[in-house]
Length: 525
Image (cartoon, rainbow, N blue to C red; front, side, top):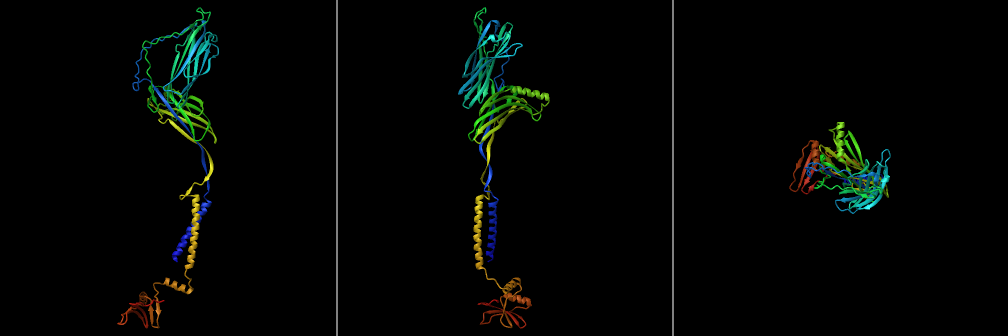
């Protein structure tokens, strides 16, 4: 019965624990919790790329040419100003890439600025904006009636080119000027009629070529009549020598500052989202900065333009000029030992419309170069990204786990344990009630208590008569002998008897214990 009682107690403790778990899971653990959820994820991606064009050198080649005396330069052509009626002019332009492109568009406009002494400059539109395709030649006229005597005239052609490539559109600008200035009674026209500008954008190397040409038409009342004069053409040298191509270093290569001729930089930007966005506009501002960490800094604006969505912009970087200014500032401030840096920073302000709200953020990326002696070390990592998202708060099922169980599983398990343990306790209670021994009266209880308390000194015995007391066991007989201080007398069995008799004699009273082959003397009760 003691074992059954222990099981009942353990089961009761387990039931109590299960009840506590049920209370906790139903009252302290919520069914739902508040969580932030991303409605739309997006990412700004930017990358710089650059090409450094080097002077001829023994290190990279081509070998520097020895200086040779320059041949005398022919003078610019001059014409009698008083008898000139007009200039019949043309402007030719071509965009020459190093690899095929999909399509090229150009917008061309030609203007003239007339500068007269003591008079505000006057602007003449010689050729309104025209949209051209591929290479083109545009014609226009400059009438001398619109040019006061003794005035300087600067004719400028503005070309804006858009090139479609496999990687996206590229935008570029080209400007070329031709100047006419008075020389006494003559009008002198610049001799240089051609201009070539190299460029690099988005992995495309190219050059832009422009060329003016003109004819001078004299007045009808001139001594020569209404004739047309063409500019004289200076014959090329007998043995022309082509200029050696410049050596170009790409991103990641060591740049020796003394060998730098020019530098072209391209910045690429894209906006990527995992859901549809619309009306994406970008405003990009690119600046250069010279700085000595913690001491001084100076910024130089490079470009500021608006784009629609992803774009790629290219621009020349006046690296030689920046390095010269850096050395001049270090000498002026006496901070020649300070760590300095050349930084090109692109700040892109992006606005996009989504079904979840407006995205209005600024993404900034910098390309840093550190001059160390005569070496300029640019950043090796030229690509950068910035993730973002539009989030909202919402109630979701409680995802927390307890001992590897969800809230619902913990509740179900604890409730099941309570039910099982309750039924088990009822069963144990019924068993305990059924097999519980009858409750003793007061006298038997005291007898049992005395046996428990004085077990070592009580000897069980049965009184047979007034002089003989039968002991329950040899141990009980030994207790009596010890208490009386008497010896134990042994009587061996006789010929017809198989019983050994043991006695302790105290006066007329005998304490006896019989031990026989057939069985011991019944124990005293």
